[in-house]
Structures are given as C-alpha cells and as structure tokens.
Image 1 (cartoon, rainbow, N blue to C red):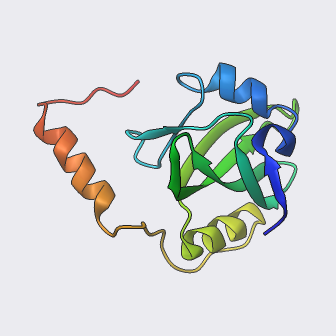
Image 2: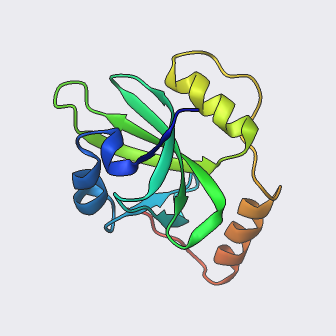
Length: 136
C-alpha cells in the first residue's frame, strides 16, 4: 500500500462527493445497501489502487478505528467527478480482491468479513423489525 494521505487529497472531487453526492453527507454504504459509515474529507487513508475510472482506498470511518474499510470510488469518464462509492471490510482478502478489480484483473475468491456472518445477522435483525423494506 502507499503512504498515508487524506481522502480529500486522493481525488480532486472527493470533498464535493462526500459532502454533496452521498445519500446523506459523508455516508458510504456497504454492499447490502443498508449499513453506512461516515467518512470525512480529512480522514486518513491509504490508496491501494487508482486508475482513471476507479480509486480504491483503505480508511477508517468516523469514530471507528478498529474496523478499517476498503472503499471503492467510481469516477465518471467524461467529467472526472466521483459518481458512486461502496465499502467492504478491509480484510487482506478483500483488499486483494478490490485491488484486482480496480486494475481490471479477474479476482480469485469471495469477499469476506471481519466477523463471518455478521452482515447476514444484521440484516436478519432489520427484517425482524418490519414486514417490508423500501429502497429508493
């Protein structure tokens, strides 16, 4: 991995994206689309791969230094603006997979979690609280 940087120094559109384009400011969701963590422009991160289309970093969410996240930011080809982001637990396996994807390689293996099965348990708890979930 590279040296430590601030998220706002990784891509020229990062500050605007985090403050204006996230569903709510600074929220980056996991792959389920249900759970988010807050990431601020001044947060420290390490770039693990970067191309014209994608930037992948490892950073810790606000008030969570124990569970670093591997975050993928997608850029628009024409404008260079960041258009989307998603995160997964920054396990060694996930970092390798996300780096390979960022660099256009076919990754081997499956994404994992710091605590196996934790996402499924969390989703199960959400579904127990309601009869229906609406996603826009």
